[in-house]
Length: 321
Ligand SMILES: Nc1nc2c([nH]c(=O)n2[C@@H]2O[C@H](COP(=O)(O)OP(=O)(O)OP(=O)(O)O)[C@@H](O)[C@H]2O)c(=O)[nH]1
Ligand SMILES: [Mg+2]
Image 1 (cartoon, rainbow, N blue to C red):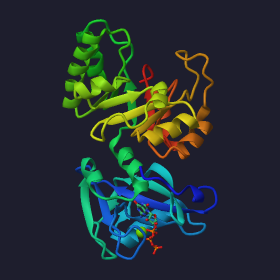
Image 2 (cartoon, rainbow, N blue to C red):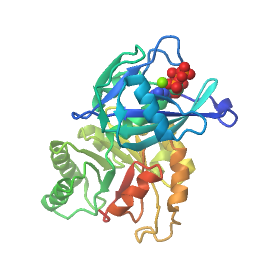
Image 3 (cartoon, rainbow, N blue to C red):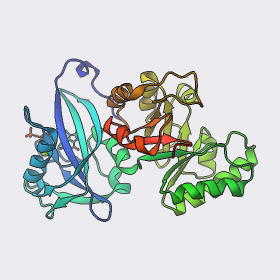
Image 4 (cartoon, helix red, strand yellow):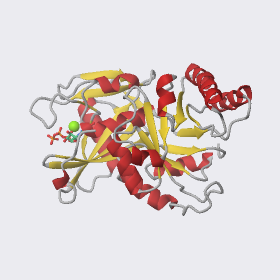
């Protein structure tokens, strides 16, 4: 991610910008090209603009979307908020996912418009503040971490199939007890099953295996965040990281990981000594993280709404869902 201007970080007032990721029936997202002569001219962006003084953000979103692309929006779901410091200008980019809208988007200000599949968003030149938004659009709201898998591979794969059945599309394979050859064999079969269901499989900590087996990605432990000097795998792989505090979230961001898992949000018997963050601290850490963040630690399906309300991408866990 492009460096921000540190001189601005504390001093410049934040301009609240609301933007809509309009999603069509095929899952494509609408981009608009910024006009010549404006800040970041030529870049592709999510339609939107500045919130006026005392204007509620959702009202600002409706107004901007009607003004810019002539559509009336229905329900807008808060997706992610990115505070970003451009030279001479600081914004809070507040992005909503909008699946309901009335009318066909048209260019009301002469700006080129384009529907783009989420997989192709990053071939468009977008403002640097938008890069984490692309990840947020591509990632689901549940991230399942395999329990200590069954001793035989067939049973371990059956656990993964059951998760796919339940609609899980992002899975971290964690198989501590497995020896090298069994782990590689399990990872290969698991990857095939997950990919066939349109999901993605990350392997816990094994950067080498993610690469050699062509898995979807790797999940870094917080210890690896300290030892890695750069993003361990190119952008075609997904890289997640386990974080517990601001320092680790900062390290994850500096490495350029795609998302983080943050916890424990609640007390969890698997980490009895870790002090729970609680939702307030989760929210504060998410707000500064500049990436999608999953809440971890004692999470159940009915925590999903809270995780999203407090600025998270969703929930992560082993047994809770
Ligand atoms: N709408 C929108 N703005 C974005 C995105 N990403 C991003 O960095 N921005 C920045 O947020 C600000 C958006 O404000 P805007 O759309 O109201 O403003 P503008 O520059 O078009 O001009 P204006 O001052 O004439 O209204 C701009 O500085 C723009 O570069 C995005 O995806 N959508
Ligand atoms: Mg605008």
